Structure formats: structure tokens, C-alpha cells
Length: 456
Image 1 (cartoon, rainbow, N blue to C red):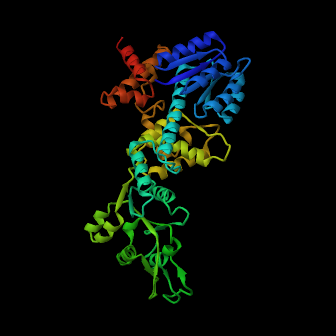
Image 2 (tube, rainbow, N blue to C red):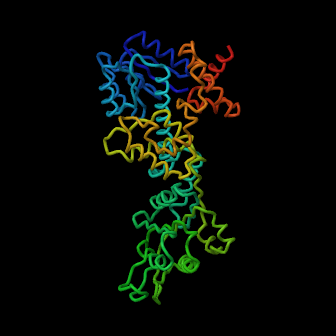
Image 3 (cartoon, rainbow, N blue to C red):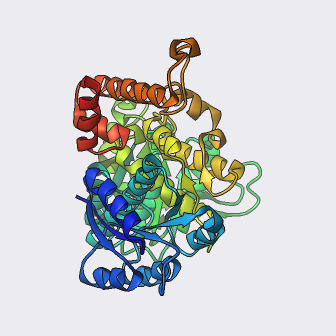
């Protein structure tokens, strides 16, 4: 049960907030001023802090700064009147997670708190993972399968075993390869990537092994190959399945003899290179079609690592978005918030382009966003269109006619639409109420209460 510290010097507001949060299954610790709140922060850990701005003698802004010294990753949500919104926005630049204006709407307040709790959970997941794995800062690994991949990386990195990384385009195969290099004893030497599908056969052979002067038309001087450049370090052969058969034979000899021969040359040169390879298709299929050497396959797949597509590890999606936002924003610039509808879209889109597509979607949103919140209208249209008809609050072509509600209050209309939506989500989850509660971003208790209200 998440523990929330609620701070407000108005007893009536403090009581209302405490009651609302307890009904939504939060453990609440109410305090009437900043000094009492700091005393609690020194005694116990909180998942979130909700505080009013206007208090005396310590206001919410000072409490924010002092709280961040004690618990830097605990999100702070500020409560403020309309006249102090500018102050709250400035406070977000100083580390506040978000703010809500008084008088607040309960649904909006609870949605903000849930986003703050989810953000802290993602930070804790990655912090725990970094502690366990001696630090892999380039990887976001919240899902169990990515945690397992990180464990494999830490085990295989200190060795010189060849590794075959398997995954769809955009899943981050080169990121994993770089992580292996960065964790290895070769990290002070070069990491050299080669895309085997990007060059024709003669050029690829020359790039890999180099050539001597006069080896072919245009070879006016001797050229160093990338295996020489990578000597003592790591070479990464991306899309190795596209490597031509003639080069496969020469590459196999490099793996066996640890030597290279330049194009057009007669001498062999020793190289000390750790080989990592990647493919976006099963090499067994290419072997069956006679396009890839079976003996080479067994040489390069000593340690296979399969990276699942993003649609199979949805726990990583929002942490990845947070990571990309922090990476893309200038140093010191505030990190944009995500509209709850955007979170829903990100979590429910199929991401055929995987992490690469997600990164591009975030960059697109940052380019066109206005204000401090990413909303659906600044996302790529194809992503919104793919989920738009079912995005909560977006409406759909099946919306009933206004005549159906003639003479009924707005409150009654909204209550009915909420009931319809809750029932629809439960039905689409096959009756699994826990899964429905997660999809709706409400507690299981709240879901049961709404379902019970529907039967009254």
C-alpha cells in the first residue's frame, strides 16, 4: 500500500485529503506544517509527498527543497490556488513532480498522484537494477526478461566468448553490444560496428580486412581494415545474416586463426578482437536455404541473447519514455509531463518499430509540444490513429446521439458513461478485474466500488 505524506495547515483541507486518499487505498500520514513533515521524512520513507504551497512559517516550496535533500527520488505534488500557478510551475523546474490547483477535482488529483507513484516505481526499479548489476546506464530494464538480459551481460562481458544478439529491428541490439563492451576488460579499446547489409560485397571485404595498394581499381594506397582498428577491442557485426558467402569463409578463418589477410595481399596479420554479432532474423532459416554457413553459425552463437520486441515487455515502455525525455532535453531544462491519454497510447500501441520507433515518437512530440505537457495531438498521427478509437476520453464513432440524453443532467450522463467504460474494460480483460484495474489506473477496491454502484 503506497504511503503518502499530506501536508496542509488548513485542518478541513487536511481532513478531506486524508479521507479521499484512504478511500483510494493509500496509507496517509497527515501533518499540519512543514516542520512536522520534515520530522516524518527523517523517521520513515514515503512514496509521495502532497503539500500545500501557502503555509507558515515554512511554505511548500521550502519544504520541497528540503525534502529533496532527504529523499531525492520521492515525487512532490504541490497544491496551489489559481493565483499561484506561476509559482508552482517555477517549483517544477526546481524538482516538483506536478501541481494541482485548488479547488481540486478528485479524479484529476488521484490521476496526478498515480503518475507520481508510477514515476517513483520506475526510478526505484532502475536504481535497484543498477545496484545489482554494477551499473548498465545505457539499458532501461524494468521487465523480468530485460533484467535477465542484464544478468547475462554482466556474466559474459568479462569473457572473450562470441555473442549472437537476436532481435527485431529497433530492439536495441547495438545498445546491448555496446553494454557488453563497456562492461568488459576491453572497454578502453575501440568498439567498432559494421553493418553487413549496408555495403556491397567488394566494399564490405575491404572495410573488414583492409586492402593493399593496387588490389583493385581505385586502391591507390594501402587501407587499414576495421578488424585492425578494433585490435584489442570489440567488433560488432550487425545484420550478419546478410554477409556474402565468400566473406563468410574468410571471416570463419579469422575466428579460427585470429589472423586477417588484406584484399590483394599475401601476408597474414594477427588480431586480438572480441566478436559480437547481431541478426534480425533466425539464422537457422538462412542455413536451411544455403545462405549461411552452419559452421560459422556455431562459431558466432556461443552465447545467444534474444531481445524481445517492445510489445512483449510493456513494463519497459514508460520508463523508456522517461529515459528518452531526460536524454533529449538540454541540461537543466524541465522534463515534460505526459498527459494520461498519452501514457495510455504508449502502453497500448504495438510498436512495430520497437525502441527506435518509440524514440522517434518522443522526439516528434518534443518538437511540436506546447507548454509543459505532451498531449496526444503532438504524437505521430499513425500512433494515435492505431489506438485512437479506444483511448479513454477520446470518444468514438459509436458515441450515442445527444437526443438520447435530452432532459438528463451532465452528472447523470458522465456517471453512465463511466459505468459503460468500466464494464467494457472488464469484459475485454476476460473478466479479470485486477487486469482491468491496472488498465483503468485505479485501485482494485475502487473498481469493485464502481461495479457495485452499477448494480445498485
